[in-house]
Amino acid sequence: MSYTFAPNNLNYVTCNRCFYLMYKHKIKIEGGFPAIFNDLDLKQKDFFIEKVTSVISNDLPEGKFYKTVTQEERKKRKKETKSEFNEMEIPALIKSKELNDKNNRKFVLKGKPDLVVKFENDYGILDFKTTSQEDKTDKYKYQLEAYAQIFEFPEEGVPKLFPIGHMGLIQFSPEEIINSDLEYITQKMKMNYYPLKRDTDGFYAFITRLIDVLEMNRVPEKSTKCKKCNDVDRYLEIKKNEK
Image 1 (cartoon, rainbow, N blue to C red):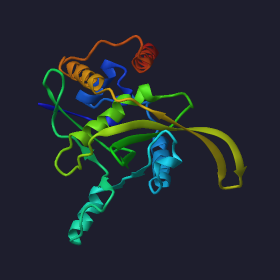
Image 2 (cartoon, rainbow, N blue to C red):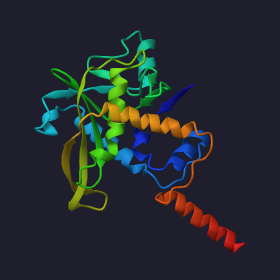
Image 3 (spheres, one colour):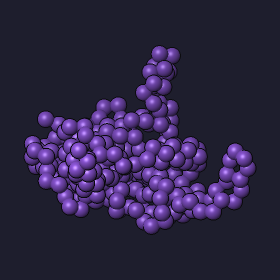
């Protein structure tokens, strides 16, 4: 048996019970990531994709961003007998080959990275976040490491980019509105770049713990620290008392 994990979903694994219900039974307790943040990510990517890393941070070496090509566009190019990929292009959806956790259980990683960078001597994985100015790299470290693992151990059809020497978050924080009319506003956004050190061993330990949870074959006990679980329980208790 092989498990499949999406890098973006790894950011929100804070409760074994919620994770088990979502993965094994497709039961998702709502209240997570608002869809509007995906729209912001896409607009940010559109702006930066044609530029170089110096517009993001002086802490990064000079590098260029890869453009992504969707499966539909690849099929169209093949039909027109064109190459699926041009220079500095990669698949929009990437997947690793089968990997092994610390107990030799198989898993694969599959997802869509924000920015992939080619430097002179290595490669980089960067991700957009619209959030506060506080450094959020600890929260998203497994997401970025998962993308690094995909590129270093890709399935057939995904280019191998080795080594991934740079990872980090590009964080945007809303500031004051500086202009408006009846249809649009212009608002300043503070941009901070936070580099992230790789922790491959910690990542594989984390995946091992996730698979341990999935192989329990029973719903884990509710955590008193999980707000979602406790909110649902309170709601069910209220509904029960209303009858």
